[in-house]
Length: 247
Length: 290
Image (cartoon, rainbow over all chains, first blue to last red; front, side):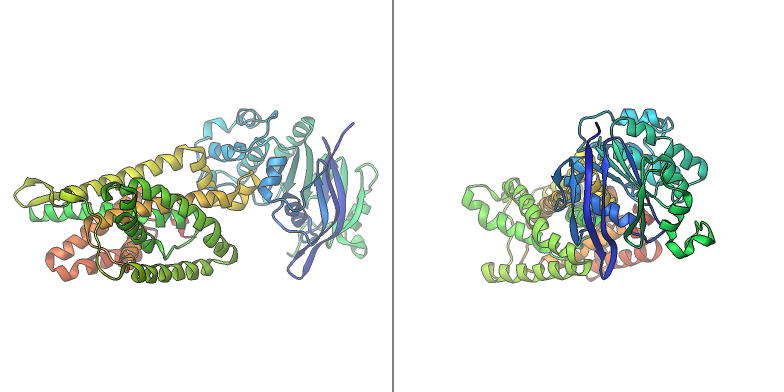
């Protein structure tokens, strides 16, 4: 039986006057991938940052392994086992690759992942571990950011826009890691603009539109037309998928 | 030989500038806080050494052994309370708050100890010097201050580059939000950086009191020299701070040798030239300015 890791209940988050997340509820179980899809500005990243503790919610609760973490600081949530790979990687640019991983491991829980294990996952890393993080390419930085989150041995991994700005071949390699991570019992909450990618690895899909839940289900249940409607809003379904967004 | 002496005296005073500036550089590098009360904290440390440590039967020469750790604790508390609260608002608030702190400190010191000059009494040591050449005198006190500066910067360098806490300080300086996501309480790390900055400025203040007379308002001019040191050396580089201090010291001694009135002017000219030609400083990275 898989246990529930994360329960988000009726979460509302504001950016100033703007309501970015509006009454969203969902849960993530151990060893499953929940993918949040939605257009730019749908509130996915805000939702993820709120779960990690970087944004304050207006209302609603966030429970992690049965504990109410709604009021906890980000570092407290991280030490409980929530790790966010933020949008734009956010590595420590002046630190070396290895130092980035060491910072990630500083408050690590016991578990399967270690710096050595990350070096096995990414074979190019050991030879370049003394290079500064800013010297790496976008795809390499994304791999380091994932490694930095993994070495903390999180129970729940929050992945924000993994594919953003990366070449297709690099994206493919990074997505290939997800089954490996999930096999260790880690739950993953994935935010992705690229629907095909996100739905491809998902156990369950949650669509967001303008801050609200527009559709939920398993990839098997949902047709691409349904997801499309939930992604762009009802009236736009005739225009077909648009991956470019004016924002 | 006269010019050699000018250089030697410049290096000696430069060591003091580096010691004075490294806390300022650290607070700016890690917290992005420009502590306008930095010079006044040094003066407070000197007053504590002169007036308070004798009560604890500690000779003024050894006052730093007590005052530096004490200032470390004060630095942590001030950072976690006053300065953190200002950071949480916006960068301009930190300027206002530390400026206010500076005014309060100066006036309190004037009120309590008057504007009379004071010195940290080091006994006979003050007049002793090494005399390797007919016109070259190297004061033992200045030499000790230079040695202390090199030791402090060296230890700090090793601490920041090798220790786990040092690594967290650098990580938090790069991106404190990302550090939080790795379980780091960045406010605590800021506090540690504040503690180090205050402990080093206490050493600088006591050193200053050993070398020359000080008064409640001595902080301001030293703060100016510390700024110049940091800018010349480059933000974010500890060895740059040492080189910056020495460059400033030598420039000032050259100016003073030509005409004593030109001492400060020559330092300011060097500062302006570096700012114009190499704004990132001699050892700074261009990215540090971004």
